[in-house]
Image (cartoon, rainbow, N blue to C red; front, side, top):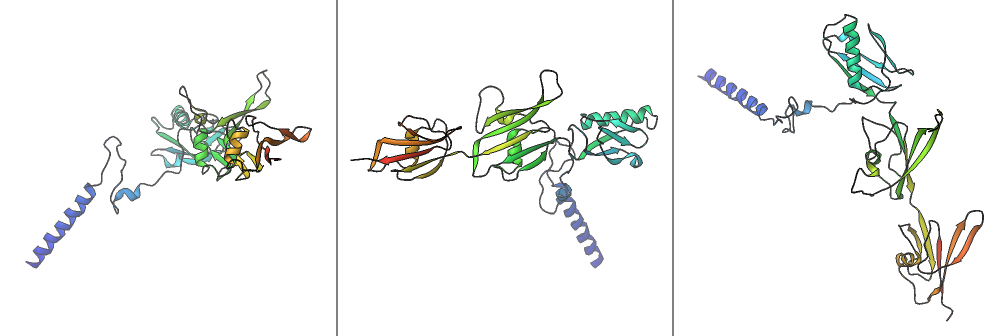
Length: 299
């Protein structure tokens, strides 16, 4: 009787275990992929991949080539400086500028034509992406070089670099190298200013522009102007669009009772002339680096 009760308890425990596994939720539109599951279930086995797929390959990249069912033909190899990939049996393959799916087809074709395999199944993944790199400089949290995993926009690059610092300006500069239109192989630098937050009702915004290998995005430091004299909050302030003397005084907390509207001066750095003092009206524009001085009234 005791053995029969122990047998029944074991059966109940097994049924409970199978029931818990059966309750792991899955998405019927994504076969074989586990969705979020309760703690302790099989979802802990779904580890993130460290490889990049379907991106263009160039010199210096490291690829993992897998021939299913043929471990001796599978390898993790690098692309040399001429853009060639050397594999067992089929030798060197020109892969420069090809996507991983195109390389898979090329490797399979080489195995088929060499009569090594009748219907080879080949998978290619990028383990280290060194050829498709962009740089981000200036006022970001993590400046440096970043790989382009397939496609990347300016906004995505800024997010990857940790976002902007408190000193970042609202303008970033995209530096891109292009060939000379006169047919020369020489490259010229093209500077593309992009205003953060800029939107457009038609087409893609500048922040959505797709980056090319070798592009450099520079986040400029915030431009300042300065206001002193008879204002309530003298100091430095960030530049804004269409900044003029009246708005500058407003940011400075307005004029004191001793201030004179007729005695406002702008000290401005002029090319090859040094600092020039300009008598200003309330509607005069303010430029980055200007020092606005509000003088006191004579009476």
